[in-house]
Image 1: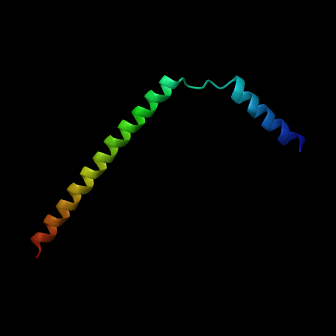
Image 2: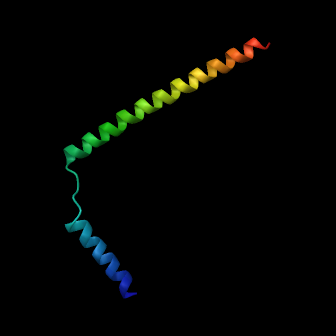
Image 3: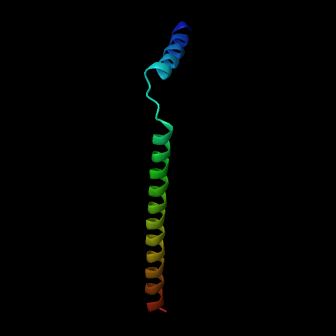
Amino acid sequence: MNKIGNYFKESYLELQEKVTWPTWANLQQSTLIVLVATVIITAMVWIMDFSSNQFVKLIYSLFK
């Protein structure tokens, strides 16, 4: 049981002393990059989905 207690104490100390937390400006910049990348990837997937849907409709219309 003592090992578990030491583990949590050392983990807490590491988070306080050794971890470098981002500044507020860095955090905002990273968030903006993630949001822009998400929008771009979503648009790309939507375009591929729409294109494949139109292609399949075209193929089906040829065999009516």
